[in-house]
Amino acid sequence: TVDKEEAALRSELEWLILSRRLAVARSWLTLWGIGESLRAAEEEVKAMTEFVHRVERATFAMSLTQVDLAEARAYRSEAQLQVISLEGDEFDQGTELARLIAHPEPAFLRASGAPPELRLPESTEELRPRLLALADNLPEPMTRRRLADAEHARDAEALAQRGVQRSE
Image (cartoon, rainbow, N blue to C red):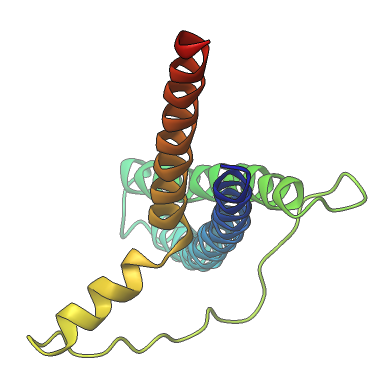
């Protein structure tokens, strides 16, 4: 049972390491997505600011009304609000990523560069059994099997001890 317990603990450690790596990857991808959205929102603010300037000139020339100008300013304000919201999201996600990787200083991180491009194989009938076999050897299912094996070994050991005690 000691060997099964050790195997279960090793599997659990592998599972925890993989889970942490996946959490870091997920956090980085989320941070990257927020950063991309933030850049797009900042571009929208620039475009809306230019639009407001044009509407102001048209309003001064009496081609548009004050209502049109107020509407353009409201659109720009909405875009600015979106930027502020995304900056907050970026800070929160950057802080979460720093926590996940145990960054030595309290800070928030930013994602730079592009995410890696992954190419998945075509799903075919021939490939499915191989993929299922690979999935069966991932840390989580392996840990569950080893924990169940260790539990069965403990149960067998407990039964054996009770049997020895009865015969004495």
